Image (cartoon, rainbow, N blue to C red):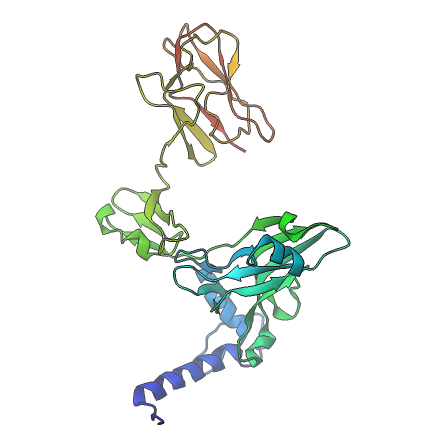
Length: 345
């Protein structure tokens, strides 16, 4: 039995047809030093539409569940024998959505991607590709592509999702996989903290400015099973991360040892002791907080039970893989790190 379209359906079809005409039509730019658009009753071409929409940004719209995630194709054995992996939809929404220069892509099911063996080291780019010629295709101008070079000729654009770096005679499961996967999210303003929406109802990375306290917060914390972010992270006053050191635990008084990053600066606080109860030996260096970021510059700071006679010096050596080393100039039962800071890479 056929059902005739309603007047509302016809109206929506008319709007869609009008939008398609706006973004796909050919357009002759006026031969002038300058011009402006849109012009009433004149269409835009796809390039002009891209500039109109550019401020909205390009990226994955992450509602949770890891949309556009790259994972093994069933098993390691099958992945290696077929040289394929899966680009997956969200485990929460069963789809994946992204925007690219004003156009939108939707993945409705996991997609098998091929990464053939190579004779020399090769970078495979997993990306969404916008191609103006795709306006003539039923699936539209954006598609998932695996390419070894990003070709921007003839109006093409890309949203990089992953990079798979494969060497000759290497199993696909041993290849280096780098996640790129930029995410798009809105920026909004509320007057007070209690006006913030439920973070789980927002896109991951959504930013809100809280006018009353002049703070900025971001929706973060989503997991594979979460239907979106789980909490608001205060970017203006970052949270403290407690030390994971077993060798140098909390001294039992004062603040617990912890660190936080404010811009490129790492701030420290708290009191530590040696696990075995022995004293810190003057002149020796200690890695007191192993889970803090690597250092990027040399800094000298002072702290301790008695800052005049029991200072702690922090040596932050340039280079990768360096944690701050603390030198206590005189023997001490514990050390206070509060007030110390250094600059990370």
